[in-house]
Every structure is written in C-alpha cells, then in structure tokens.
Length: 200
Image (cartoon, rainbow, N blue to C red):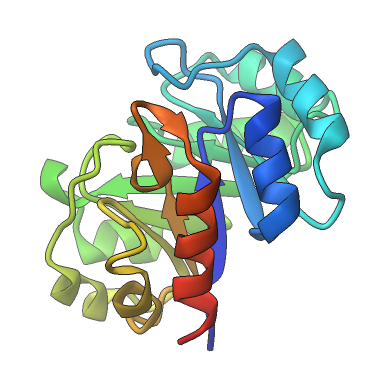
C-alpha cells in the first residue's frame, strides 16, 4: 500500500500552489504560536479557499485550551484536528463532545511514548514522531513494528528517505522541514518527496 502524504506547516500562497500542483493527501496549518510556521485562523482560511478540494486540511495544536480548538474546528477552516502536546484521553473526549472532526494524536518516541500508549489512544488516528515536530530528526523505525493500528510517520522525512519510509507500513507520511529551504516550503522538494513515495 502506498502511504498517504501530509505536507505540514504550509503558510504562504506559494505553498498552496505547490500542493495544488503535486496533490498531497493532507496539509497542516500550524496554530501553535510557538512555531515558526504559525499562522492565524484567518490566514488558514485564506489559504484553504485556494487549496485543491481533494486535499484535507489539518489544524495542528499544542496544549491549546479546548474551547480554542473547538472554535476553529467548528468554523469550517479545517477537516481534522491534530494534537501535538500532552493532551490525554480526557482532553480528547471533552474536545470531541464540542466538535465533530476526527482527531490525530501525536506521540514522541524520544519523549518516552510507548506502544501501549499509542495503541490504546482514543484518538481517531495517531502520529508517531521523533520529537515535537518540524525538527528534522529521525528515530529508529524498528519501533513501528509494535504499533497495531494505522499511524502517520513523521520525523526527519525528506526526498532521500521517502521511498524507505513508504515501505514501513505507515498509513501516511508527514513531512515539514524536509521539504523546506531556508525555513520555507520548497516546491521542488515537495515534488521530489511526493514522487519518492508514490513511485515505490
């Protein structure tokens, strides 16, 4: 199975144009204001209007108040909520009582995430990363063998390892810094990454 592809941290109309040209399955809007890829909901709405309708829009949050996440989730700006902080099942349950979008919960291998934690999460989907996200750091993919549910794989992905990552069994591959040049999304790197995955 060829995994789906998520280009995370898009922030400019040029990024939208690149995604429209090469059609990943998902994009990520970064709503955590500690990120260099942070955008406001208004900017996300503008970008989303120009994005190809086949591409699902993910909103990425980190330990945000549930009310803030639910407000954006209910606005129509995004299709999926991604939680990248210390949010637990109680948080997810309360959030889902306030909105109707699927939830991706990210787990950091280097911060001690275990197979049991990942497999038992009440989130609709899980993401396995090396660190907080967007760091460009890879982890030992042997860890993935203990995951018994569909997962997004992130952390250190780029065109050079896209084909290998596509063979891990991941449901989707999530890339951010690996398709950037000088901190900005690079259309050529996006193309090469997507080709590397889909030509396996």
